[in-house]
Image (cartoon, rainbow, N blue to C red; front, side, top):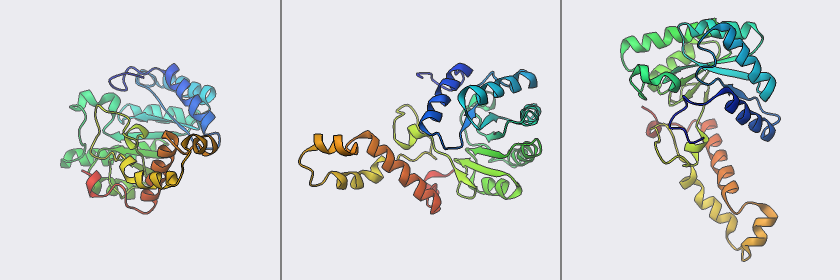
Length: 241
């Protein structure tokens, strides 16, 4: 969208983007990320915007950041019949008040607070929790202490699933790349070259297969990411704190 961070994004913009994702992935479970300002003011406002998200975009669940008063928001939304994913650790929408983008949970007090908050998110009714930018040992400890799904983005291997921003996975965002983000393009170039080897007519090959350009690079990169997660290769030490 051209913004410097996620804060300015509106509900209308998120709904438009999520509708596009739903059209491209009609049979997938899709989580709509509640933008800043759409749930903090009150539980009524949170339910209203979550309901908009589900009705207008076709997403299956919503995600919101934080604990504390946000536990009430999670409870209200789930009571309205909408599944919720919690988000703890580095929370981009509120990162400024916690000292900017940084690893969360390195101190004993922060680690204990994260564990307490994770249990609160679970008890409020969330069906899953996203942990962002935490030490791997803490990520594993929180994951094993929960009965709900615990997903990680920069939280190490010992969680139930991995997230990676597509723009980071493909090296599309030039401004910043956190340590946990792996660009997969260099790792699939040989495979991509193999698909073109022996082709004398790139124009015909492209028309027949559409595997001559960015679509092919994206497909191969995402498949490599999935394989490495399933085989417990990613994130590994190189992409962990």
